Image 1: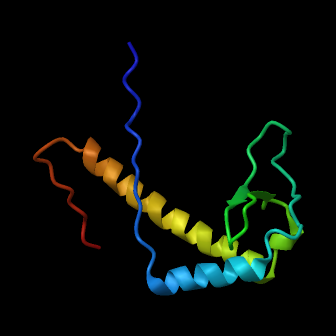
Image 2: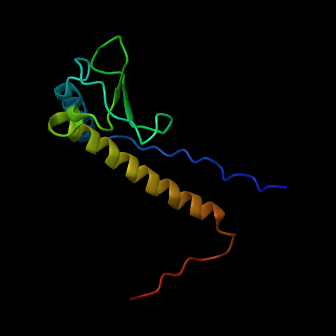
Length: 116
């Protein structure tokens, strides 16, 4: 019998007023609804590729942009927007991994870090 897979973790945090304003500024400056949707996927046609799904800026439509291998994300506001989103994802992923480690640790055990 296989062990059960680890439970999924769901972490979120509220954006600050400054982060929200910066996100909106970059999304508007990126002009995401006017083209630059195509990019290059992974090595195979069935492999994963990075996309950005946008519900933004008072638009009734949804746009999905391929960001991987897409020259429109290599510089300027689109690059800055993607870097901001990747930073938040890394922050939440690290926090989720820490939470998962805490859940896997048996009750009553302590983590001791060596002093270097």
